[in-house]
Length: 334
Image 1 (tube, rainbow, N blue to C red):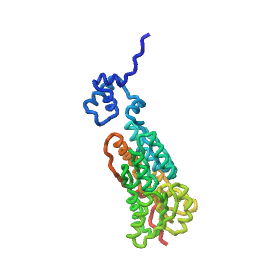
Image 2: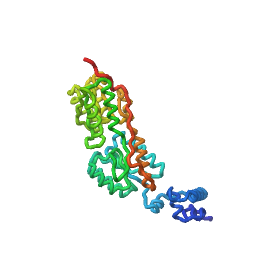
Image 3: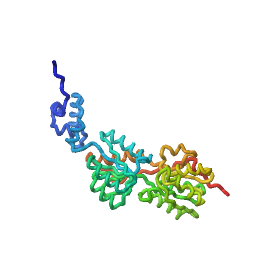
Image 4: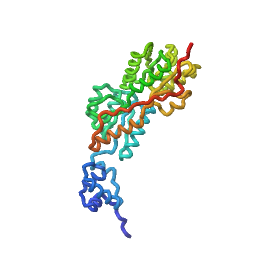
């Protein structure tokens, strides 16, 4: 009985291409230090032989897992889901896997997850970490390579983020242009940098807009948070609401509708993020659209650059855009 031919290996590719085993390994993994002509020869030999690299063997040779970790504060939030979608698709296209860890807004869990996942991966991407600046800096030095999403500039890692201050400024300017002068801000993740960015935009608007009054009410980051503060919002007599995000805005909208309060006739509501559901509420939600999928793609590009010997941009900022829909209108005159 004839013996079946064995599967071609890296030795066969090296022999056909006339190069060393290490050159084949580096060429097959896109190492930029390989001479382009040699890399082309190796690729041609691999195609001729029908050779594909064994991922386990490749990891052993490179000392890599071909996997990166992403630590996020809330996997149920559609914005973080969009970031993950952009990141994971880009990583997959480059031959990497993504391990996702949800800290559930727990600061201690966030640090522990980041350190634990780094032991099993090639790098860690921290999505909107909630920890204080000093703790974050110390953690990044232990995680390298790392990327941070939605924080200020860091010494230990490149940062990709959205300009939440600019987005909030557009929302406030939209409401004041409609004639609103008594507003409520439903604060969400008060430990987050993005919350402070929102606060700065509101304070700046109050300072430059005559008779503008904005009251802050502690709410939260999810649908139930918006529902829970409906009576507090109504008690303020505000004509417009600036919610921390779309989920909070949608929760408030639902609660007010149940109470027979017309939106936007009696009160305008705005959100933030422009999650997919925002366009389909009744009325559709005015909001600031954050390019979340692109945030994920850019975060991966910054990580990939570090893993392949490239240079990542230290700080990259994307700008949200105002989306005006039916939930905001001029205040009702009495």
